[in-house]
Length: 178
Image (cartoon, rainbow, N blue to C red; front, side):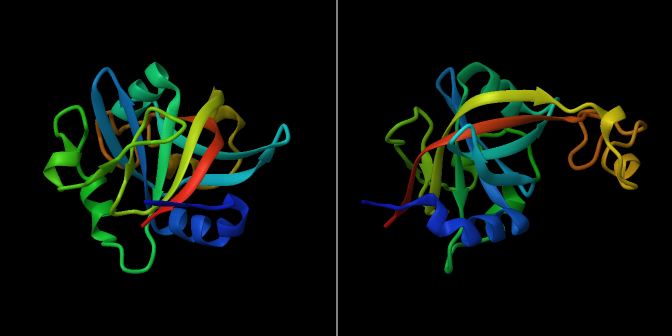
């Protein structure tokens, strides 16, 4: 069962979740993948509620997002096993079926083809309405070289030379899985 919510009523919970880690779930070509993220924004653009996520160029999730253009953001609530974020952030969906490996429970999406994850019940269903590759030459903050070290290959987890693609997703549905 799902309790429909007004996403703006849960802004604080969503942003606190993103800061400590949430799951970004994608699906394409019969596969479902989830990855840990702690970079994302919630806002309003073009008169629409949006969630913007940032995915490195070399990630499997990026390939899936480019094929499907839909995603869910799965946010823990009190009582959620937050160690799931760490587990999902240590391996690639190219090599491991994280859903099976970590015993995650998929719940069909209502307005998107991507499922939610029961273990992280606060769910945003999103459709990509804009995407853009980040331009490192336009970044003006001291940590750029730490976030994008040129001597670390794209296959490395965490900081590596790949910049991100910003995916702006319109939030088309929001609910809490009960």
